[in-house]
Length: 155
Image (cartoon, rainbow, N blue to C red):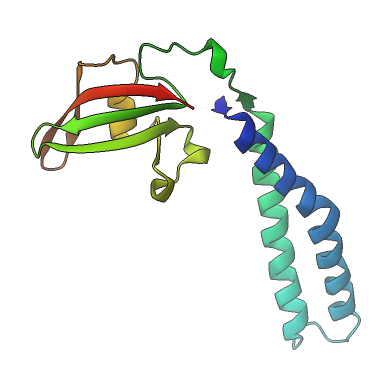
């Protein structure tokens, strides 16, 4: 089971609805047109329409599976004194004395450019459950990464 923010759940549901109600009917129409053009063995339009149909069906099934096995997080029920899902964590890398801030999210919401890391990533997993002032440790290829938690906030 995956936990998603309400916003991300709604985004995935909207994408699924768009694919089912708008994209797939158009893909099916395009496939029928390409098929009507005759010999399928030399019909590049038909092959391309089949490829797009396959990708669309695959994405629909993927989104259906995610939404079927996901639950929306009640942010009010999460602990506020320790790192948990949807918490924004500021921490210091003790080896380099560099401060970083990331929001801990589910794997389906991860976006490094937006400052969101997965709770299943090595850093996310190490931070989970820790309180301000505690040190989280995780193994990386070059050794052990030690991170001191400076602050925890929720948006």
